[in-house]
Image (tube, helix red, strand yellow):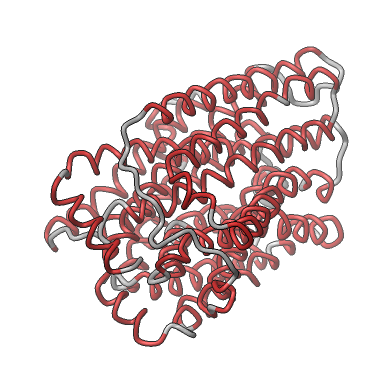
Length: 491
């Protein structure tokens, strides 16, 4: 962000802190909504796999359609901005978010004819359209969250919103598992059955209504009108920034690895050598994976903020404890268990939370260093899942969610830091890199079909190895002293 724009943002914050806080809360609802929708794919994959008798590779086309839209939509956005000037620089972040919500709502409406005609192709078309809408949301909302306050706490604000996003991804498998896999008896249903059509049609029509209602609400909301810094910029100068290219590949690997794990977890937990769980039960454990992201992101928001040392230490104890008991409560509701039974059932997750807090301490509140530490932990956990079966593999895979937590926010903030008028173009390229969520699950699906699901985790292991390099060394290449100074300010 340019110095003039940064001073303007800080002046706005000083003049009307309440307005800025309200804006952040309103933006957080967008993060919640697209998180909920994204994690519903993890429930949709095994459901459609059974309905249409798909292989692992074919079922992963759900993620190809959804996350492929991020690549195509961002590519279109980048080409337009390079030739005609940045669209968001013309219309502002708020209107960009409104258009994104409307497009995503239109995609959700396509689930009605898809479920009526039992068309896998039409399901994929609906997911692709929803992905296009969320692409525009991402391009608009992420830099908007950074722009409404001081750059020194940008990672903190983005981690906070990503924490709310993870609350959505946590609730998605729980509610999706209840509605699609359990309450409506969708498991094993034939594509032509009314129950099967209703299982998907109802939830996604609700999503369509919520997305369109949010679009109307945001079009009328009084949010600060902030344009990207600088004038409407043409050309592709941002591609000559090594830090942007390295950050793009880091996002590619992170999203790809995260989606790989979430997409295969339900089937993985169903293996007799792992846990032998039914899909409805397994979906509740997938919620722990996404819940780990939520807890870690709230912790990241605290550690990268300007709270006092005493407040930070209290929060580091309170947030994991509150997160654990909240997840236990949601788990007990979804599985119709008593609260005490649930606590006993998921108590290994409490030990994993302690491990996560220790990793945060090793990260020393530095965004890049924390990325590297968390990536190393993810590699170790997945290697354990490959080499071991049973409970070790089961909980190791769930634990990766805790260490995915801060990766998106920290990589995104580090990459666009100091880019000034090139921020929106860089944001579109980072969102384009979400295509990793389409391609890496396909690779993992292919490995799973030919070599087994445990071996297939080698795909996200390779991705986390690159993220380790990025966090410990790669993030600073081509940035010189600028990044070191900025990161020191964040710490």
